Image 1 (cartoon, rainbow, N blue to C red):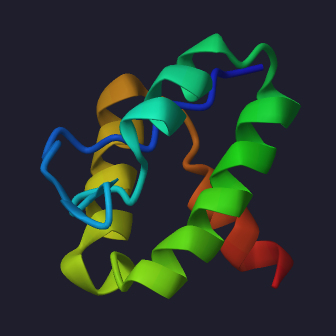
Image 2 (image 1 turned 180 degrees about the horizontal axis):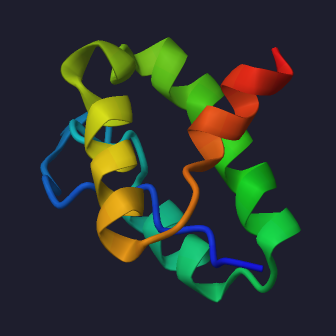
Length: 87
């Protein structure tokens, strides 16, 4: 079972109502993700983050492409691809 990578894509500029312009997380959410234990909890977090990104408009800034690249670099299957297949 591969670990679900952090949604952070190393932009880290909190200019959208306290949310990062790169991934949509707040500083508090970034800390919370690091403490999550298990693939299921991290996938649930990622699912919630996608809703936040939709509301904030982060997806249009290339987050998904950056996250897929991060997953590939870590050698893990991207949870976004699995979610696309389920839809």
